[in-house]
Image (tube, rainbow, N blue to C red; front, side, top):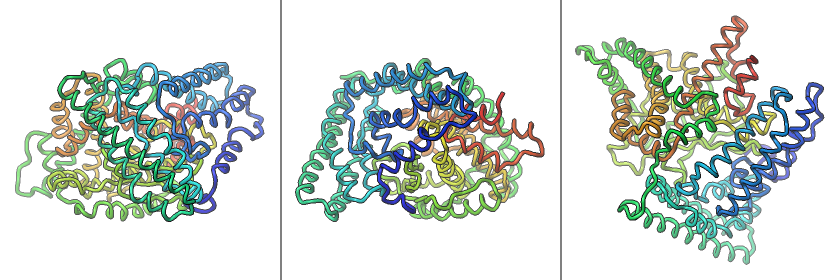
Length: 591
């Protein structure tokens, strides 16, 4: 934390929301429809939204309802759906054609949000088949680490939430009907990790706090009940998984299928394009990248294999050069330290090459991924929400402690000395970390809160290319080859996700695509198969957002000619929060 935000109470967040959204005087350019929209969907709307979504509120830095843990039963789902439909009806009483461009973008975001919520609750119904959707750990962990209030205040909030943990997991068990095995096993893994949030470190915080003796007694009782509830849920899932494995209970397929996938893609990606069209574009882009990589491999072959004739097979040749470069990597025990060392280097490069303005007051903390968050990705950004922008951003890096020497070596070869900086560009500077700081500054809370995953991931992928275009990596063929391999992974993410969930792509086909045609290690490919069986559509967000941002940049360059300024483009693009690229394009390049 920095400055006064360190111990700022939630009332500061409320005041901030009110100032930004509701109690400003409408400008002369604001239409009557704009005013109606702001009145209907200002701080009153958001306050009610946070009442129904207190976990999301905590992640966004809004702590008014942080003491509430919603029990995920039918009553709660019904209440959420009823309120959602009221909001949707109110929204459609406002004609979006009469709104100014910026406000119309907010209207579109809310329309998508309400539609997605309705579809998720009534058609996707993942609450019936995804046991991993039930995990109390994250908000509790944030309450112990984010210093938005004195420790005793946060512990009392924690204590109040603890009261509902047993009921929470009882409702989870009552809701689950026909889970997938993949999500069942993920839930077991992550809820085991959740126990760490309620372990010795928390007990030490309580012991060292100024809570009363009576409060500590209640804390110990509720903490024991919470741990028991988590243990019981894990045991229940293990028994359920045994029934699924034996066929005693029919498991749902993890594959969404064409219809559900198309609907989820439309809500999540918000590109205006179809999932099938993006899949076809990805197939074409894969061939373009392979052609480039073959040329780069021809340039590098004599340097690394001076006495050998290159293979006639294009894929073999590219693969051998990449394998040679992959021998250079950090030591297993030095992974987290190496990531920490690279962040200042990336920041210096961005500043010296005038790519985008960085905010030195916003801290980035590299740390080991908390146990309850492991199981999906090896690295990730955990950023503060718009209500508490002074909170630290965590760059989670999963250590390789639990891997065998062979698996660890495979992982390290994948993230070799050429690849690790690209990962850090993507996750940190000037990728996710920088974009999310800009998003928190957006004058529209709606654009920041209801952020679009394809824009967020797309910017991070675009940042990789932008950095290499600026000369990062000394413009070496090695850097461009490994970057192209990384970019090929982005493209293959789309091919894989659509192929698996819609076209029935098998694990064997996946391993062939990723190891032979995308040059990933066996371990990386195995992890990606695991990921695609536990998530859907999200893997397409990288290529979708990246392609849309690149298309926008190139279009503006053609139109503006010598007047085009790269830094100005970046900062204007980022100023619209995390709105979908399609929405941003309409604001930057009105048709």
